[in-house]
Structures are given as C-alpha cells and as structure tokens.
Image (cartoon, rainbow, N blue to C red; front, side, top):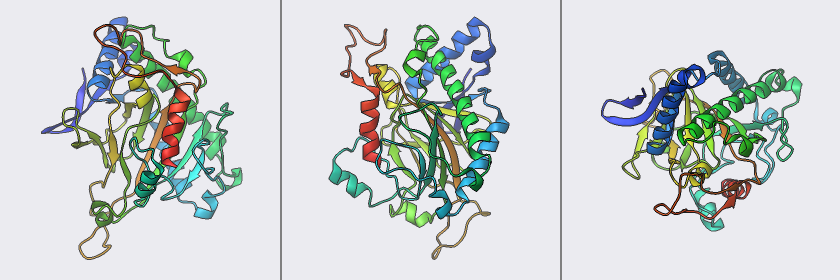
Length: 345
C-alpha cells in the first residue's frame, strides 16, 4: 500500500515499495502496477523505494557531481553545452537556461530570461546516441568521472526506466514490454544539477529564480535529490497552489512528462513543478544584507526519458473511444521536444 510523503495537513506524493513489482508474485506485480497507475493519474508523481539502483551508487553520483561543480568555471567550460537546443550535452553555466511553461513567442521568452535560473548543470546520455554525442571533460581533469562512473550510472537509470514503463503498461492492461520498442534507442538525458547558495531576498523578490514552474517535455523523469529540499508540485485539486515535496531517504521520485500525458490521452498527469527556496538552516545561513539569509546549496540528479524521435505519439489503446475522443493530433516525439527545448535555450 502507498504511503504519503507530506506534511500532516497537506497531501503530497505517495510512496510505493517497488520491490513487489520487481520481485513479487503476479498478484503483487499487478497490485503495484495498479497503485503506480492510480498515482500517476491523480498526482503525476510517485516515490519508489527498493527501486533497484544501489544506494551506494546514488551517493557516489552525488559525490562525483559535487567534484565536477567544484571545478573552476574555466575547467568546466572544457566541456561546454553547444549553442542552441538541438545538442543537449555538456556543461551549462549559471543563468544559461530559463525554463518556461508553454511560452514559444521569442519576445516573451526574452522577457522571461531577464530573471535567470540560478543553477548550473552537466548533461550526458547514451554512449550510442549519435544525434547528441556526449561532451566530456578531458579525462585528466576529473579522472574516472566519465568511464568509471557516469556511463555506468546512465545504464542503471535506463534499466529502472524500462521497469517503470513495464509497470505503467501493466496498469493499462497492456503487455509489460509495450513501451520498449518506442524507447528502444534509450536517447535519454542524464543531468547533474547544482543550485548554488542564493540570497533569500533575491528569490522571494523575483530578482532571481531557481527553477520556475514547468512540466517536463518527454515521457518520464527520474529524480534523485539531496536532503536540502525546495521542490514543490502543483496541488492535484487546486491549480496554482504548490505543495512542498520533502526528500525521502533512499527513494527515487518519478513523474509523468508531457509526451506520455499526451500519449495516454490525458489519462496520466504531467504535473507542473518548481524549485524554490529551501528551508534555511542555521548551519548554512549567512548574512547577505540586513536580515537576509543565504539558502543552502542544492544538488539533484535527473534522468529524462523520451521516446525515439521518429515515434508518432498518438493515444494509447484503451484511452480513447466514442465516449472519450482523442484530445490531440498525432505528433512525432522529437518534434515536440525540440520545440520545447528551443524555448529553454
């Protein structure tokens, strides 16, 4: 049975033990799949415990992330994110990105970018991805980062994504392998994120931001986060109201993204979320101006799944009919994602 990661008076994200899907009986697999589907329909987010990615590997990834972001800017820029949005790999410095929600007008995007997202990131992906080849630091600048760890961790995330898709398919009474041909190339994006300390006043006044309210572009997103906090998701029953999502030790947070919501004819929910000021701790707080505090640094690890670019996204079997017509025209997965990415970079 699912439990809730929430405050006492506010609903939030259910916690489901994935062990029963990975290792249980057929009845346990079906029951867990139904819980996951229900949660994705209601909230769009779920925490999975016992998900199969070793805790030690996740902790090591956070260590590598900190080592990377602790490098000088000059060093990090030896693996630069290329201009534009078509090659989403390498390092993006603070203020490079500005996430928006369904804003495509160039003038409107220019206005949004006047308030930068105060974060930096490093993107990598499948070693077999010829569309977006990885961009790495020279090996001697951070030995082991690429070959000894990141490429291997990508595989761990891809395996978990495959298993979650199996659970979703089973929840729709589809064959467990239903989604595999559509994601066969595993053109996913593994992102390391660092939100440096920032003035509480700058965040609350809107002078600067961390990550504005948005939904994700692809099909599914995995998130491993540290214990700092700051993530919020939109309330499932009250549009515009956001709920804090407290970190859950050892769990991975998974959410539905826009393409899968579209694919499911809105049966599954791609929920708007954001990163705001985390709680200020006495340990990390410092004076910035009179009475102002500095937030703690925040680190997270994200893996964005997307369907093969040439896949046509159209309503899944069983999600449409005479009483529930298709809501969207078919679209190629790659076309939709590129449109969203171009508004970000």
